[in-house]
Image (cartoon, rainbow, N blue to C red):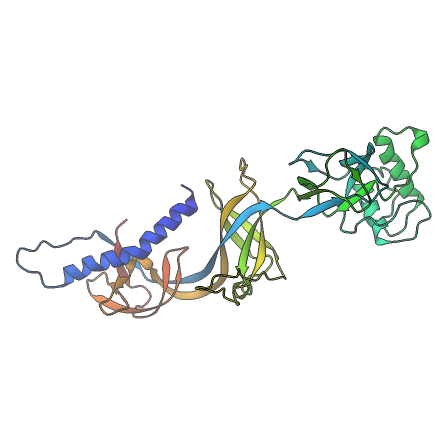
Length: 364
């Protein structure tokens, strides 16, 4: 059992224990009939102190691979002659597939390929993107490329070095790239679907592969009203199956809300229950191999310093409603409660107790 699950179990016991303890305390405080045995509860004491109350929200999510991408062919029509296996990850510079035995390679960037690359072409952001990749791949060893919007002689020289790494003879190294030779995607591609079968004809615009990034993250669908209390950069704690909780960070909050399901005639859908995706980046524990798994996310949504706090386990149910605590001296004190902090097992005391008083709690 993970530490988080043990903590959750302990909290559940702490919340329910006052009710059981309250019965025992009430039985002990009422006049006893002759010969009636007294219910005994082993107790300890805890001190009421001031501290910081942490407000948390718990979300349900799923660990999954992020992103959704397609590798569309933009070259001359031909026959698809090779494709990767499902589950393969293609990185920068790797071969995605072959058309007429000509490799189509992956480069990283957000701007899709929309023209050929070569000396004399007009300036553009796609040139900057190409040059960034050539530098990252190590084909500018003398640092001659200025990564900008201009295709220079140094850019052509870097392409020739890349061509040499493919095994091309010197005479076939052009220093140019056609639109059909490369594909830009925002991240390395983890192949999940082969949209075209090897041996079939493909034309410009044909989707050959589909997949995700190679990065795993936790994604939660969060009510739009609740999402307003979350912020990119917020620190969270994530619980996954059969492992200790791990720290995480809110990496993205979706801007497009998904409407609720249609519901049924007996229970129509709540039109205000739209959700947005919240993506949480985490570092997975060593040896964690599941591609997809349910996750529980604890988000700290606020803190209140200087609050008078008492253990939740000290609370006793009062006849007629409300709560009371038993003081260490034996008397009962009615208390007014504020917010609960289940992560620490503490509750805010609005009135009824003062700092430094001792209260009874069930013994551990």
